[in-house]
Image (tube, rainbow, N blue to C red; front, side, top):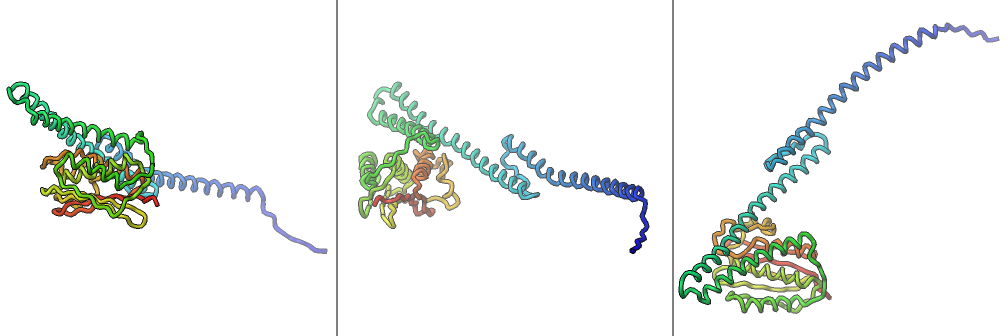
Length: 313
């Protein structure tokens, strides 16, 4: 026989003790949870409130604002992204102002010339000469060029202009383009090519690239009026270079020249017919073809604009 002897505590007293302890613990935990929630919400919401306030300032057109990039990783990344957006908006606003200044200047000058010479021919006897008529024709052509460039860049960037690839002789296409220049200008334009090259591209758009690069070189070349075009083939790619002997481009402006409506000479210190759209058209077309392009320039020695396309074997 086994005898067990044990003292049994009252069950009700134990339950009451546990209940009281649970109530205390629950109260303490609720207080800590409330404190932690208030602390975290303030810590998280404070950067968001600052970002919201800065975004409102940005919405009013103040692009010099700076978003807070402190706090949690996601909030920091949001602040960084918004700072980048503010920088790009500021750049766009600057380009818009340049557009208004450039287009106003480029429209006003030929319109003034056309109006002035027309009034002279109307009011003064003997002024109805071929020279005066040619001036009016030249200024009207400048207006046409500006309008056509604006339409071209708008169509290209909106994707509404058709894009058709065909195999064509790039070398012969360049020769044909330069033959037209030889009849219209007194500039010394040379072309050197090691061999004829066939590429698969949109012939009309690539001809626009060549036209715009040659026009740009003619606009900015030096007093010797020399423009040199060369074509070389290496590693399955054809490289076309257009060289001028002008003043060159400052190094800090090289990255901006491909932007829409950008002009290096914003003060119009020299007589130029550029619209600020030619190089942007070049960039858009070559991006559509996946071709490489660039510029090498040094102040006082001129510039070399180039592009590359794949050769059809």
